[in-house]
Image (spheres, rainbow, N blue to C red):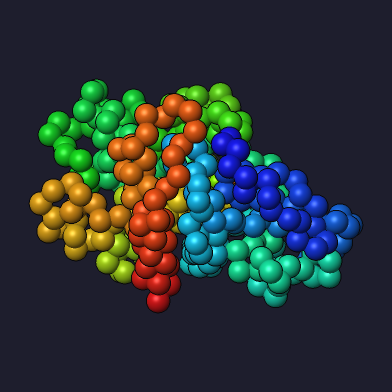
Length: 308
Ligand code: ATP
Ligand code: MG
């Protein structure tokens, strides 16, 4: 991970012990691990920062308000979706006792059950773009799934496809894998259950997004097993502009160029700027102020359009 100063600069919220920092989120456990958090077993505090990553590099500076937007959108979706999720029952009341949501980071925090995470990123694509488009041009397939001839960048796929990735350890890049490889990693039953859940959640969420004039082009879910109930549970962030591509439906219908069709509410602004201004060697350059501002505004607009 890039050492840009602010990754290690976060302070522990009172009453919480730092467990782990991912590229975007900081994870904590209660200082008093015996604290009863509504019978939820091991609780954890997940605090989303304003850090932004692209192509698995953490960039500088952060995107103002991003941690709060990702958290509020995830909470909204967890409520909307009809699947078991990792929020503990007491999250809505701000937690309990020493495992209460710390005031200073409450708006960008989730109180969750600590799950045994599957090392699989459950990616679903309903449209062809990004790495999928690149692969399609070379092989007429995406992650080994054959697709019809004649598709263009941004086209809707005949049906959504499940294209899992292996969740690489910190510092390594995630890797696209076949469904058969996920069977080797987590076993046949869980691999199939994760695939079926991911496809179902994508379909439900895409239908909801459509009512807001938005296309959910693709997204990534992470699942874990609840250590108490054994249930496969939706975890991490969900359907955020970090984990998904959202486009404006009207622009997609009427746009004449790929740029106009894919008027995105996500990290594409950052990805595009970085691809054009960096050769992926050494330390990534500082993001210019206008890229930061436009990304921040798009993230906020998505939250408002979805949750209004
Ligand atoms: P990495 O961990 O490889 O840096 P990342 O950049 O996606 O990946 P973040 O999103 O910043 O990581 O951090 C969140 C971490 O917390 C992820 O590793 C995710 O798998 C993990 N996680 C999310 N929800 C839970 C949960 N309920 N129980 C256990 N781990 C969780
Ligand atoms: Mg993540």
